[in-house]
Length: 180
Image (cartoon, rainbow, N blue to C red):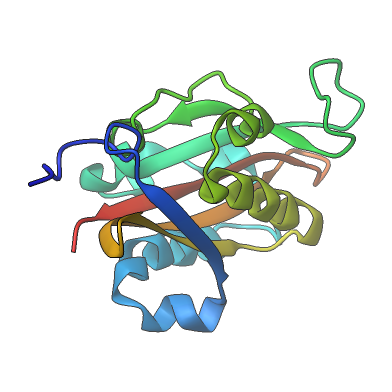
């Protein structure tokens, strides 16, 4: 028997990830919390809310361990080797760390996508780039399998944040982990 407390890396689970549309997220129970976060973001001032408007007091305390914040690394940044925008984890909530099985705070998302053999991190990187370029929220579902059985799922939302000039300088969101 696999403990639900073991991380997906400890269990060596196979991952399948796929983007979810806004409409699908609204209709999918596992996206209830990510969709609430999306609604909070949508009600903040500005077309793309300013990063300073995001404060922990906006969110239920139980959501905070599932949240993450990414700093944008422009294509011309010395640390960025992707040829496109990259991201560095400013915060990788403890629920994400514990369920995934690795601390990511301080890591580049592209680095995590290269190091992880799983499709989900690579899909998350591509989806985060898409949220950046399109300047809209994106939703992602990841399912983790052992043999043909789903062991864990995680429902993500990725949301852009701007600076004073309207440039996207941070991304944030949450990943809600569930064990069926």
